[in-house]
Length: 396
Image 1 (spheres, one colour):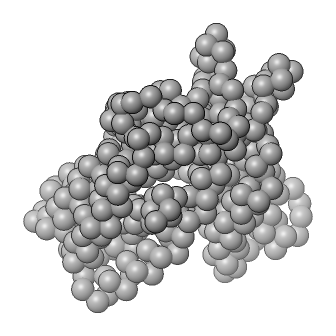
Image 2 (image 1 turned 30 degrees about the vertical axis):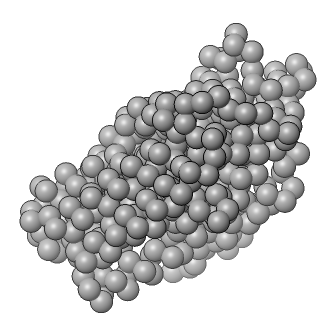
């Protein structure tokens, strides 16, 4: 089996079971424990935040022992956590299991998979990361209906138990297979590959570049989080009413479409250029909704441009650090970037709702569009500096 396909399958299971299934099963869980759904989402948000802090140490472990080894261990722990959720006798035990699950998730989701590809593919990781995100993009398509069907057929407890078994068998099995595939995984030196590789930045420029990338990724992540949570209400308030959900469904095709475009046509671009496109698409999506276009066209522009920005954001979070800083310490850098991105994303939906309450949805959109422009500036400035120094060779 191709390593990209193997990781793609584990990402579908990972995101599907640990993320996308949650809102589908939440009503049944809330009814079982006699709690409002808001309490469940508060626990889930807390888990995501704690997971952001755990990502830093997880990144160091990826560099030290190899990402596939960490992913294999993460799959086993994810299975245990999901089984604990399934068997939880009380809301308190279930809440602890959820938080532990989101902590373990950092060892099996995108950042870990990107680090594994960097270790397995070396300089060929750019294309591999794009192809991985294309496969993993089907996680919601598979697990939303699967979770709903299983919940109706066997209940939420058995559903989580089944998902835990998927992590134990398919997830851990494929990750252990990856461990055996290449001498690149582990503590030994990484052999050189014949594929041209972008030249990492000189040490004197690393700190400045890392801060620029961290700020941009954090602010863009805040926009993705805010717009993703509030998309349907915002579209409805803009005048689409009952068609808001239909317009929001364009996000998925836009994500897949732009990832396909990246795979076919953006290979000659430096990842920093693609990151700038992603960062610019997010504020443009808000402007498209409030610029006075016909409401149906504005809704299409908002959802489509948001999908473009979000689709590319998943790719560049892996390719930009690899192109700028190289493979040495790659996992640790991904962990640090994940931390700042998670902190910014955690409070963004609340901040957007507060801005909407005080300024109206239009005012909130203008405010967050400005935030998106600020997010793009560090990337554009960094790209200009590298271009003037002749350091924009693409990472293939």
